[in-house]
Length: 84
Image: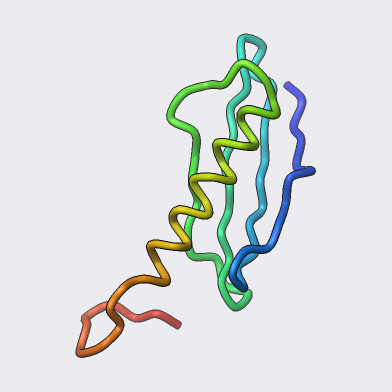
């Protein structure tokens, strides 16, 4: 298995670390999302992709969608959850 982590990027003040692995019959991958230096989420592909480019693209899209959703949350009022 070969792992490629060359698709790291920043988006809306978040750092996204993408890792794609050749699984022999397709490419699998995950992305770690960091906000203000703290790990917030790990996204993974639910199915393998035919090539590494498609896997990186899918992870990048999932990461941007997650971040956009996170930033659109209503952060007013009390919550039992902490966002450090």
